[in-house]
Length: 398
Image 1 (cartoon, rainbow, N blue to C red):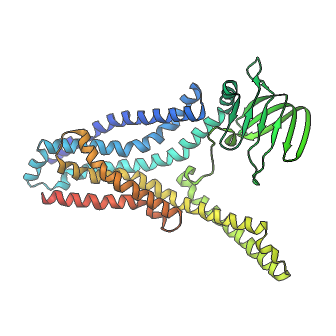
Image 2 (tube, rainbow, N blue to C red):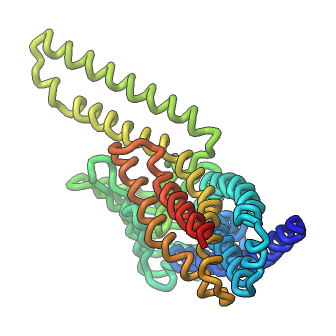
Image 3 (cartoon, rainbow, N blue to C red):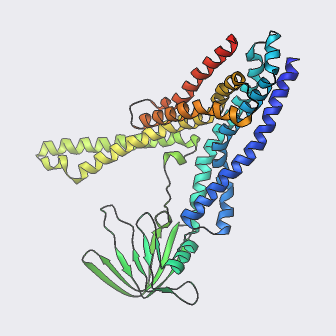
């Protein structure tokens, strides 16, 4: 009898979960596509190419909330119909009809961990790649309609018009991205054309009769010349690579070793140079540009190392939020005994909204700052574990 009852619950949860997941994921994907379309100015073909990469990112946000919605709806409805009360009156402890759903959510949590890894290591780089490859078309559209194209990285093009063929830039003025010292150059030409080099990931600008001004230095270069800028610097919103969040979990361990080796090597060089400076009386070596550069490399290296340490913990904690959402949602929805889907979901989501997400963000920030260990990102899940246990204990006493 209990086997049939448990199968009925899991089947009802699964049906509602799949239907809600399709709807919720579609909404998130639509919002993601629109966001990229508005921020980057992508065309229809580029938007279609984005869909496979946006899908895992959408699912990683949709699955925990959708699972909570399905669980709260089903358990709330059967509790309102007194089915739970009848089973408990027959002497069946609550854990008997809760355990199958918890096991299913545990399996889904493992899938969610894998999905989180795919979303950040495959989805985000894929989106960045498509955005970069669309720079040429996006830039021409902006130049034709607005006469200028500006990226957040400091790269910009201003033109006096577009030629009859739709590709010749008439009297363009190009501002290059700032260098490490903050300086940039201004390039003017009689005409220019844009071409994307997808292999080198560069935007190639072929200029005619180019003039470069860098501060007070001016250089005239008649004839045809070429200027190249990285696609990551030429996109409207900018892209990034090499961030800890974009590494697959299998590559994070080797990357941590590389980062530690770089920090150790830099510290050894800094210590040797400091000792040499003291030995030969070169006290200016202690606080010159090279010393400050080495110190900055060490500090930035430690910050990146902390982020690399945190990343696996974050992905596992995010994935297992499915299990802890269900752990809180089941006893709370049974206790409420509401047949209304949204009432059950809203009430169960409230402690998650007020406790889980703030605790997760606090743990994440404290771990990034180095005040707490990387495992602190599980703080939100730990709080839900306590809250769910309290509600389950209350259910047993009912």
